[in-house]
Every structure is written in structure tokens, then in C-alpha cells.
Image 1: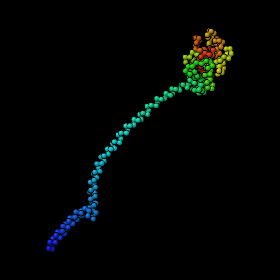
Image 2: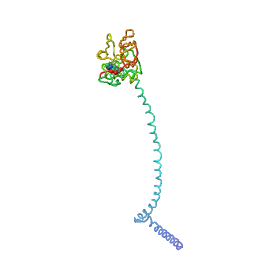
Image 3: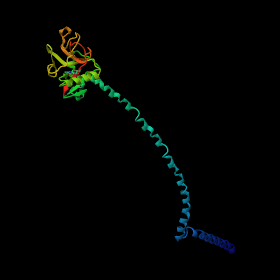
Image 4: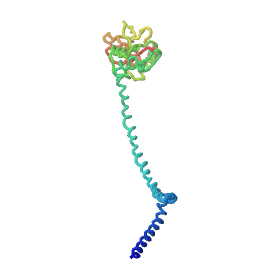
Amino acid sequence: MDKQYVVPKMKCVLLLCLLGLAAYQVNGQRSFSFSSRPFKQSRPQSRPQFQPQQKPRPQFRPQQQFRPQPRPQFRPQQQFRPQPKPQFRPQQQFRPQSFTSPGKALSGGSGAGDGKHGNSEYHYSWLHDGGIKYTGDEAHNYCSRLGQGWYAVGVNDNSENSFINGVITSHNKKYIWTGGKKASGDLFTWLGGGDTRSYNNWSHTGGHNTPQPDNREDRNENCLGILNNFYQDGVKWHDIACHHLKPVICERTV
Ligand SMILES: *[C@@H]1O[C@H](CO)[C@@H](O)[C@H](O)[C@H]1NC(C)=O
């Protein structure tokens, strides 16, 4: 009866020993061993094997290739800038309108003169008013409205007379008013000073084929105009009734 118990016990002990031995051998190589060597050896072995998985990732970088492509093509917005507004500059073309009121636009300004001769500058009304013609008195007022020192032209010597004649002929004017006004008889004075005794260039003829001044029209020719060959007499002085209409040359001493 005892052998029957002993044998199973022996078998059990043997089995346990075999199992224990087997377990020891297996675990000893892995984790049951308290030596540090197996751990250190196991780490380098295992992790380098995962690294190759990280290597393929750099191949996804081509995402960077999408960046430079799109937006530089939207810059053409800059092409819209230069197009429109430079065409609105013609405002400068409206400046000449200011000359229709010469008294204001040119008051005292150095830009009122259209020509210079000697110590004077000259202003030609037709270059500023669109060709308006004035009575003698209106012509005198036109010049005084230009500003301080301006008056209808006075012709005081042969040199100035030649200059004024040149203006009349080069601008194809039939006639102009001067600043000469009758003082008495045949004597005319200039608004700017002096009179026709010191110098004159009266025409030798007129409506009555008589030398000027002749005071022909209504005995009332109190203004002095220069006519451009009106009586086939060249550019010459005539006494003229002041109600006639003519452009004017103004003068200012500078
Ligand atoms: C008068 O004017 C004419 C030009 O029309 C000129 O030839 C002549 O010399 C002038 N006479 C005098 C005295 O200045």
C-alpha cells in the first residue's frame, strides 16, 4: 500500500523538478537572470530593427514641393495700378480759362508780359481774352486792371515804335489801341507819361486824305490807335473816335 503512494509521489517530485529545471533554463536566459548582461545585449539588438521603419518617412517630404507652386502666380494684381489715373491729368488744360479775367489772374504778376523791349514789358490782350475788342476807355481800363504799373502802351521813341509795329504785323492785327489821349488840339498825351511832341509817327493820310491827326469823325477823335496799312499808309498812327472797338497793347516799366 505504501509503494502505491510513494510511486506517485516520486513521479510528482520528478515532474516538478523537471518543470522547475526547464523553467529555470528558459527564464535564465531572459529575465530571471539577475545579471545585467542579457539586458544590455537585448536592447541594441531589438531597437535598431525598428529604425528602418523611420527611414521611409523622409520620403514623404515632397509635401514641401506644393508650397512654392501656387501663390506667386497671383501677383499680377500689381498690373492694375498704373492703368487708370494718369489719364486724369488734363486738368492742366483748364488753366487758360483763368486768363479770361486778366485783372485777377495776372494781377501784379511777372507772367503778364508777352514781350520785352528796353525797360518795359508788354501785354497783348488778344493772347488772354480770346480776341475781345474794346472801346478806347475800356482798353485803358483793361490794362490798368492788370495791376500796379500797367497802362495802355505809350510810344516814346523810334525804337519803341519799331517794336510795337513788329508786334502788330507779326500777330496780323489790323489795329490796336494805345494809351494816347487827346489833351488839346493836335497834342496827345500818353497814360504812362510823355506826349506826342517828343516823338510821333502820325500817318500822312486818312479818311479825308489829309495828314493825321485830323479829328475827322464828328470832330471827336480823342483816342490814338495804330492802324496796319488801313489807308495803304503802312503801320501808322491815327486819331480815332474812342467808341471804335480794338484790341490793346499794355505796357509796364520793369
Ligand atoms: C514811322 O514808322 C515807320 C514804320 O511804319 C518807320 O519806318 C519810320 O522810321 C518811323 N518814323 C519815325 C520818325 O520814327
